[in-house]
Image (tube, rainbow, N blue to C red; front, side, top):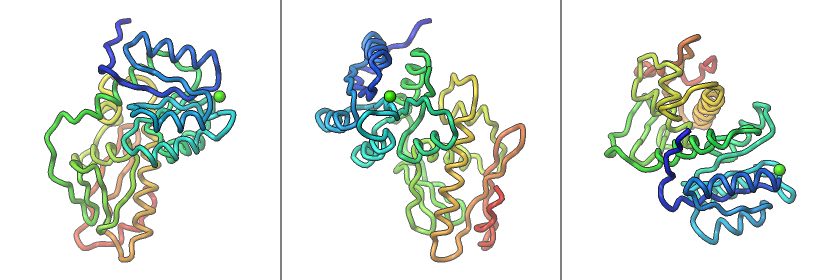
Length: 254
Ligand code: CA
């Protein structure tokens, strides 16, 4: 199968202690036009990440010296725009959620195919190159989504969202009041050529809802928050909050 070339000079930091997997990734990326560097420990990866700018990190969670989640957290703090993809043998939802909460943009469960990894990398990296002009912020009740600045706030207080959570919210907000299918969301937020399981959508949606609910709980006055309605067998619909009705804030049944 033909693999489109990587964007030129894309530096990828591989953090993997397993020699077989590490070599496989290093060779595979190199032969697909990426510039990989392979670190075998969390500490050496953090050092390496400061040495030269990387566009992406492929991060094993089970490292000999540190928990991969801590590495993800530190990388995210230091490099807000870095693409972090977790490579994990752990398949429990809780581990995937922890990885995304720690700052990862995406995850792949081992064993994964190099072809899939390369497709995900391309999709993520393509999205990082702004192709559309800045857009007006979207206001939904007390929630403000500034797509140009990639910021979200509730009653003026910043709501911290992971990149995919932000994109998911934006995709729903741009179609507020309208049903959006799972397929459309997968295509818009992840990859236009997406096919296969859409569990990553459920995981990201759960995290997004939790963050919005937490932001509403933190608000010092009642906030009007849009609701995300699940449409079983179809997708989701984001609903405008009723004008002047802060009661929707505490409806947590969504
Ligand atoms: Ca490992």
